[in-house]
Image (cartoon, rainbow, N blue to C red; front, side):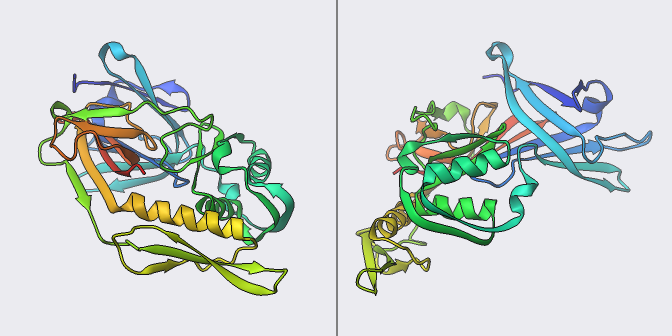
Length: 331
């Protein structure tokens, strides 16, 4: 696999070349699961004559071409910070993904009656001119009543996603509501699995850990039985080999809703037990949410499927292209 990619960059729609790449020290892009905005960071040599870096508010689009494989689009980003360092002279530019909606942070109060999760997510997506792509497997529950009280759309959707073991994210003008940790698209199709072999790994970077941190035997949550005017509980098994119990503080209005939330929390505990991190040479196709397995690394590790949570792609003249990944076991 070649480690000499061709980086393609446009600023406000205009391709850059020449002095931009002459002065570029490093470019890195972080792709994350969930609603944290993807980020772009660039550093430039600003030795005299000084360099005119992309301005704050500029739209930077990045793609990379790897030989005959064609170009991989790495996204569009809005510059939100430009920092000058002096003696020595360096410019650092930071940008966030252009799909992140600042207006989704405004607090609101409202409620829904007799609405499914899909109804609610679709309504909020359309309010922000986003195309909803929703996995039915985590969107079918119907609420008699659910409220958003002095809460932003982002926080509300994240809370709703945790209850239903869904992954909520915004990419390329779309609001995605997926099965968390399933490695599937909104349509239910499998995301192509990546295979990382011994020859792909930067020596000394591959880690797989099995931890007791945040392991619980059971998850408990409570729901209000209106008919009996009593608070009742739901308990589900998370890890039979662990001890202790995790209690969810949110109140739930029905047994079905409480059980779904407890099962989602139990799956999250199972996913967090076994984690991996690694740096891979020259692979721009890796992305957050993608299933991945190792091959030729070690018995007991090879063949186990992980879901990538974070992919940080870094380009520099000295090291070429590298992708640092972090993921959790698929359950």
